[in-house]
Amino acid sequence: MASAGEERKRRNELRRELIDKFPRDRSSLLPALHYLEETFSFLPDWGIEVLGWHLGVPPSEVYGAATSYTELSLSIPSHKTVIVCDGVACREKGAIQILEFLKEKNIDGVEIKTTDCAFMCSVAPAVSVGHTWYGRQVPDNSLAELIEG
Image 1 (cartoon, rainbow, N blue to C red):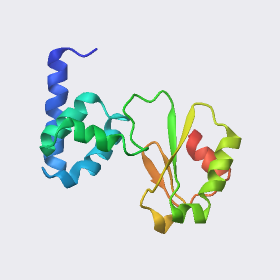
Image 2 (spheres, one colour; image 1 turned 60 degrees about the vertical axis):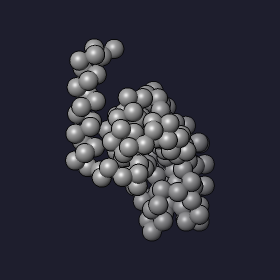
Image 3 (cartoon, rainbow, N blue to C red; image 1 turned 90 degrees about the horizontal axis):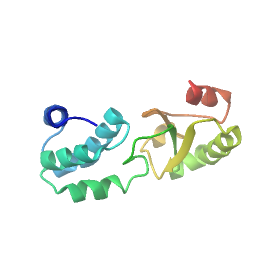
């Protein structure tokens, strides 16, 4: 557990990063949540509070937005998370086959999630591994190697 001084230091560092990267506007909420997720691999409670302060919105609104998106996590992951886009374009281009392939492969230590849309329709189907999105994926061993790597 972090001491009060360490906690204050982390909060101040995050405040500076948010000020540098995101305008103090409600429209920055989702991009900033994704930034927190990429930075910490989850959304820490104190990060949600700092983000609310930065945007001038209540932490409850930040929490509400965070819980609306399946690709965002409020707890420390105990495993690698793979997210498969389940949007219309990705479904048409093979997302269902990718999900079936990953379930059959049953890769140890990997949790498979879906998201309604990754907004990567032009490179469908899209898969996220380690907070990096990859487009034009196919259900084969190269995908399994990407996940295991």
